[in-house]
Image 1: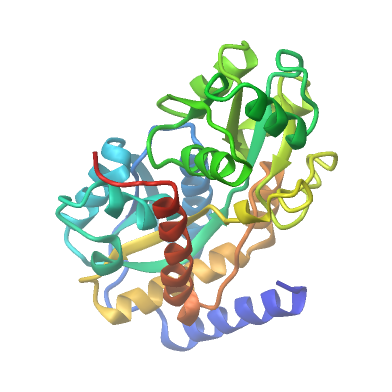
Image 2: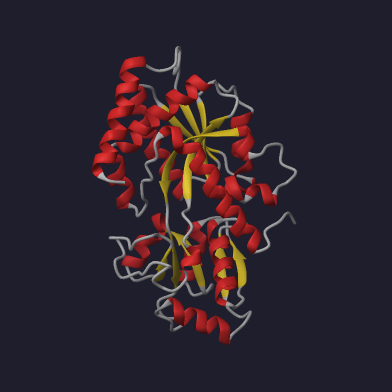
Length: 324
């Protein structure tokens, strides 16, 4: 998005809030963001950063509560079980939005039916990483060639079934024509630790958690799932540059509210969050960790979420994602 468009978005949101104020009586107390994952991961980082800047806009505290479990479903259900008055939000991910319904068809809710998108807090690229020396590979083509030479012998780490490392890893195998053994972990830290130790061969790790290890030489980055190279890792090519444009899927994190929330509060939330996300300080903090802003006009947020979730659902189906 160009500077002029960012400025226009910020100015429009500010004007609307100045003219109309927030929805009557809202917010009347602190706002809570439920993060359905453990503390320390990319979702937790983005939620806490958004909470800080949203609090400045609302002039109310915005607190983050971690509620991990069931691939995010426990935290999502907590939000739906809370009064839908705009004071409790969910930090949702594209994986929860698009993949969880395939994995958990018996869940009590459907994201596209029971939640409404407030804004896209960030997009977080994943980086395909390997141990710097164990495999003897320096490019993505090297890894693919090795996988084809040793079918079923390589291992890849994930954060569990349906996570972004699982989706990306399985898509790579399908597109490149080789097979590897999945090794699930509870999050980025233990997964990347075992790759650094040479216990697992490769991982599509979150940029926010692996950039330091790549810069420090503890991991080797082979390709990144973003449209352009990251200024933090200028030597790491994009998936398209590496010959796998089919892996160019954005992994985004969205703040969402119960679909039962009154429309006027949803509108006020969207305008307030748009102001928070357009703050240059917010965008600099994202960039420092390798995450990226995705500024979308408030009225267009839901359409983007619905459209992009369909792409992820199709990708998940293409690798056989379904309830076990």
